[in-house]
Image 1 (cartoon, helix red, strand yellow):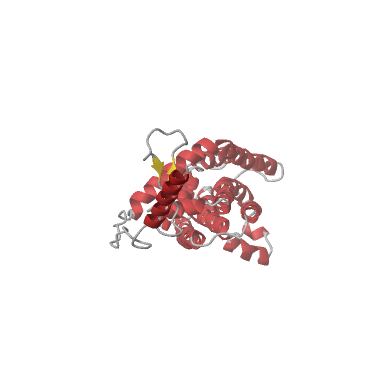
Image 2 (cartoon, one colour):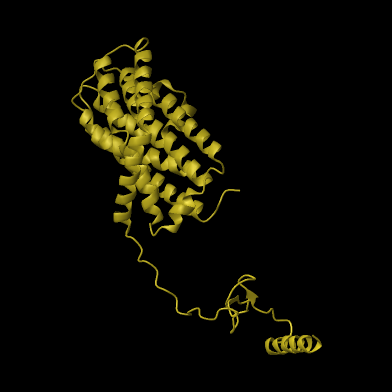
Length: 313
């Protein structure tokens, strides 16, 4: 027994000497494993230090997507999403505008007067303001608060494509509601229908201006609740300042009306609802609306780039 114990002790000492001090011996798979060598090695520190085996040559990144193809992809995706999720809201926006015209019909006489034309034009553009300004501000506010901007930032998609494509999709989504409201209002107030083809220019230009403003409000708001509040206030301003003729408003309120992007679309549409429209006035208002739309979309693009590199507190 003493000899066997001494032999076992000697073998153990030899193992410790082979592995060195402080090194954990391999562990058995389990106590009854038939193979004496069936052991799990203990944790070992990889030789060569940190970074061994990592190539110092950077891997090439995927090529950046050009702006127009990316914008088209974002536009199609957002338009499909809006058609599925926003149809009830478009119905609400259209019903709201038609209800305003019916309500105002009790105090505004039909015909080609300034009041009737202002009510119809302002109610039609209000559909654009409800969707492109109000809903888009809420969408971007929730997207930023929920971290969705980070997802878009990881994709090889230019910031301009995301901002402009989403704004264009929401503006395009308003076309049926605007057409229905304008035709219904012209019939309700006995206004000529011949100039309503101008909606082909009013909808995209006013939509670009209002969508750019809505996207900027949603992206710059520090909280989603504030983005919703800003969108609601902007839509209310488009309602209150759009359905009333400028001549009936006080001078300070008239200045605020001039600052609203939808004002020039309303003026262009109201002009073509008279029997003999002044096409020079129409073109000037459309040109101003286009310029405001470019500025609003540029602001939205800048706000998106700013939101992509900073997270809300």
